[in-house]
Length: 136
Image (cartoon, rainbow, N blue to C red; front, side, top):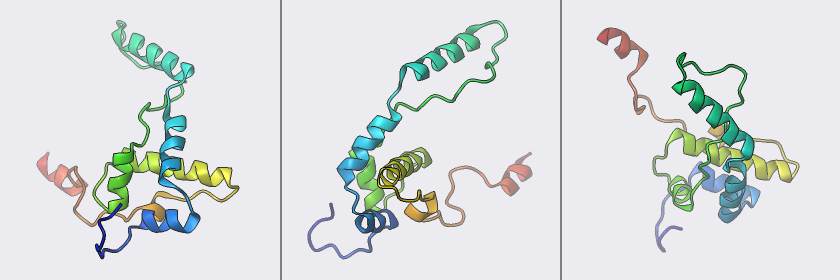
């Protein structure tokens, strides 16, 4: 997906996918199957919505967490392969899709740091704990 003649280092994700011979199109398809909302997810969301509208306004206990319903898009995967910044939930969806493909191939699952570089110090979106305490 890089222009011809571009001499940049491949990302960890790109190297991993080449090493394991995983196609990008397969990741997008697997993610679509994993993240799709199912009837039980819709029922859970309905119960949560009704509980918020009730007088108590508290979330009922013991409910499963519903799927997001948002698969990895080809554009998001392209950004990840190019080394551009992507959000945490997108990284997690890519990780789930990669682990599903590895599971189908009877291989061991990987962790997030095997696919993505850790953010450099001070690059987080939120305040650090020390700054948050100073602001109080």
